[in-house]
Amino acid sequence: MTILTDGIIINERPLKDKDKIITVLTRERGVISIFANGAKVGKHSSATSLLAYSDFSLASTKGDSYVLKDAVPKQVFFRLREDLTILSLAQYFAELTYELAPREDKADAELSLILNALHLLCDGKKNISLIKSVTELRMLTLAGYMPAVECCCGCGCDFNEDEIFFDCAAGELYCEKCKNGKKLFACSPGVLTAMRYICLAPPNKIFSFSLSEDGLSALCDISEKYLRSVTRKRFKTLDFYKKMI
Ligand SMILES: [Zn+2]
Image (cartoon, rainbow, N blue to C red; front, side, top):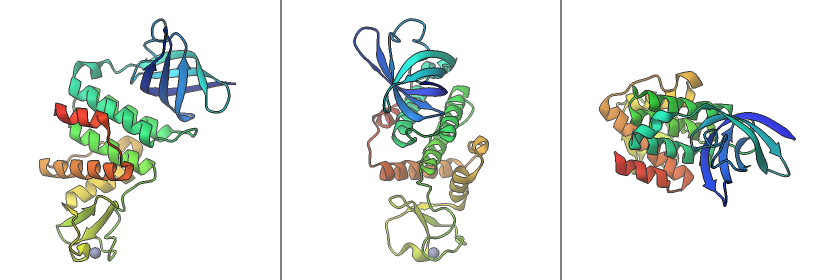
């Protein structure tokens, strides 16, 4: 059976000779592994390189095993390679996608999210911490881990005070009254508005907001702590990115 889909390469592993296995976030099947015969060199090497966005023609053999028939690059994001910090963040997004995106299921929203994030990284106009936080929180939301941003999880109030508290382990928000001495992360109403926006805005709008420097710093801490708590995973690419900034 032949499958036609577009997708972005989120990992590549060399095999012997000129072969490699690529892991791709595809629109039609989510995250899949593809055996790419002779793709280390030759006409498919660019379309199957890490972070390339390509059109694929695949042979589906048995189970979830796929063999590359053809690949044509749609976008290769060359500018990522010009800056090691940007490249390390893009590689972190790829690792995040591998961890959280669906398998054997449609992944339009996840693909659109990572493509938008990479476009913005290449464009260089948006603060990269903002791009990172939005990608983390939205990817978590798409994976079913949207933080409970509507109201206080204790009393249901809509936070009339200036101090709001986020429980990074549970993804819950509390007002001052309901905090009950728990060790929570303090955030401002501006940060809460940004979190609500990232989780709930239409896909093409999620990066379109700004925050004060302090607000952005708090948002970064929150999204990263919550992500680590949900995935319980140490991302090597994130460690590398943090050494670069
Ligand atoms: Zn409360």
